[in-house]
Length: 456
Ligand code: ZN
Image (cartoon, rainbow, N blue to C red; front, side, top):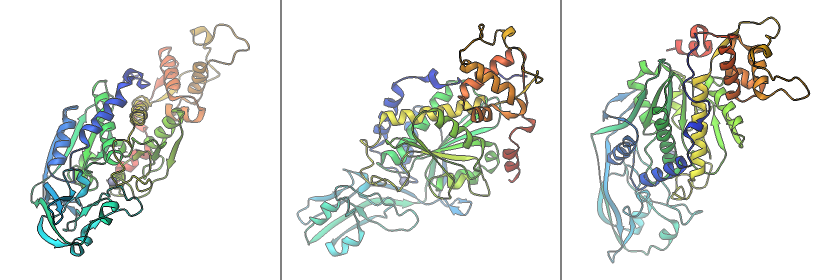
């Protein structure tokens, strides 16, 4: 049985110069919200995503044990500032939410500059940028500010206010499950816990939401699960509560830092040669733009959790600039100017192509394997022989016939031939239509992946 090819072979169906602009405006819409790993800013962000796709918002109570962790207390903040002796606000959370150390406990008192100083964080080598600092798992407080401003603070008494709460509440995360005809799942995950930072956080959210919008609009063979989770604790919470569902995840991508101008970089899953790893190599190669492929390491974003040995999911990560390796990282320099519509758009296209390849990757058997079948009499070969190079589709048919022995997937044929996956898939469609190929069912599909799923 030949299953119908579902997703378009390229995302031309979604071609719209608007995608980049739409994603950029979504980044701008979410930018002012003060997010954290819990709290109302996170909820508001999930609600805004839910205005675009039918996201389910889940709430997990503080204190819930999740794997080796515990869901923390919920943090909310209303205002935070430091006033000098004249009553002027020299630091003000209302102007930029990076100014307060995320998860700061409440404070309200006067103190000298000497007492205040250990609670102030700056970047001496970037005196005009405000750093981003957190204290999630250790109760403390602090402010982040421009080094230039710190240098100009006179001695004297300062009034300090952090009007925050840290109490039992919930950890919120968003989930969208788009069922396909097959229960095998593709996981798309991004973190939603950073405050006003664009590339690290908002770019991944915008691309994941746009990808979800695209997938909602097409028939699907595979099932898609989109997770919008606070970094680390959110992924751990989801895994802890969904060990059974995690078994169905066959392929996955973490999206993080996909909006800056650096070339796209794919970090392989822990498995290293999972189908998603091979798909991303082919798709990036076919993008005809510079790209980087990185081996797995147990550091980075939530691929750390999905690829922990007890799960070992085939989840890689798509990024541009590596976290921690660009000056704007975790500073106010990672702002709306740092994320470009064209970069968001190109990241979305690569994701969408990757899903298209996953949807259309199949294995076939050549039903006429002795000698080449005569394509000409079937109208599949150029009518006039001669000096022309074989057309691309003819070469794709020859490769597909030759390697379709029931074991090689179309992806493997595309990789080995160097021909675009879309051409190989089109060749397979034509050859199937003319009775020269038979699709193989899933019985022996991806034994390596099946084996890894047995480890649960
Ligand atoms: Zn970060």
